[in-house]
Length: 60
Image (cartoon, helix red, strand yellow):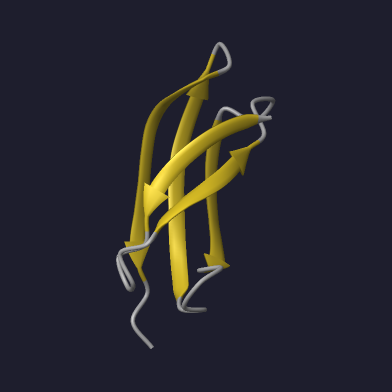
């Protein structure tokens, strides 16, 4: 697993996301662990390194 830190676009808290390096292109939705608002994650992993990472607020 790869550790990647990001800031929630809702509450602006820094958080750690564990990323599975066996999947190159990933897109998933999860709730923020702090404020519980929905977030959409889009990322690319190459050679066990995060090449791109974005987190988008999904307004309720």
